[in-house]
Image 1 (cartoon, rainbow, N blue to C red):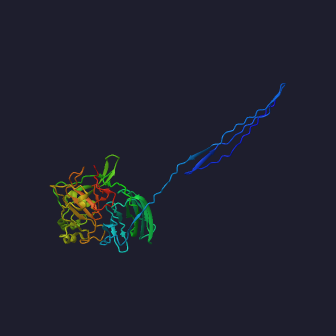
Image 2: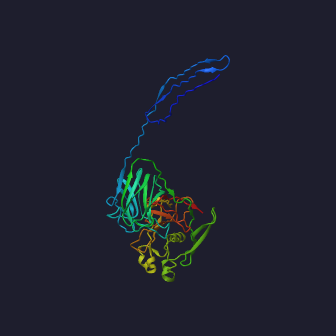
Image 3: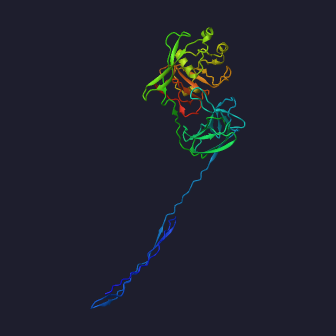
Length: 442
């Protein structure tokens, strides 16, 4: 018997249909027919069986609705602040730099070591010094927030080419850590910097003067909260209470050894101290012993503070305006001015934790010549400030505290009686990332 089975399949092709918003999808089930016929069983009693089977499936259509999603991109609307020579109002009083602020578009901008011009927003003066932290260059920055700055475009030129003239610092918060380099160009150039999401910026010089012709600030004015906390200038710093002379002061004889450098020996509190000897002199003694003029001359800010702390008075080459001529006859170009004693509590005094006696503060200012233009009438911007009662802060023992400024009280650096000054911190201006903070004591 021969068995023959025939299968017939109806096959259909497959197509991938992409899903799209609002698309109707149809699925169709096809009919499949299976036929079996002429089945013969061989043998004596052979017979032919005929059996035809037809299986039919019904065609169905299913409709699936995919939800429609609408994606909308919000278009930002921008505002601009444009700074130019007509609205920057920067002082032209001193060619070596001026300090102050101006208002533009209801926003306060501060300038530091800058010179105004009828052709420029500002000339930012590059600056370096042998004292303190080496000096801070000219700067221009906003002291009021400009919310959600998208970009800042600066048109400028410099004195040289092919060097990094300065930096553009920016950030959401008051402390600015991110920056772009601003490259020198002796020809006028326009650069746009993406500082998306920032509320503050600062342009500062590093190795060249920057002559800013125009600044355009593009922003959305979308309010966002920001951190107004500055860093502490005392973090990780080492301070010693000053050396104080004990006994009768004798000109040319009384001496003290003061620390001029600390060298860490280990990660603990062990330091190697290097010393220098200071000798007490009076103007009358030097007048009678002209051979000691050079030895009696002290001009560096750290030595001035150490001297005052040790002997309770200023060096012999310092004098009041009244006695200038007599002192100048002995010390010549190394003669320096000293102020009268102050007890005011406004101005820069507000930014340090000064101690008082009977409710009063007492301090004095001594000039520091930062270049060879210094004179009785052209005193420059360098000062040492001596607080007689010290600071009302932990680890201070009531002895004298000395501060140094090279920008006429815009910022300060505290002398730590180690030969070193601490980090520069804000006083009458907000041009650094630091405010006063007490250092460690040893």
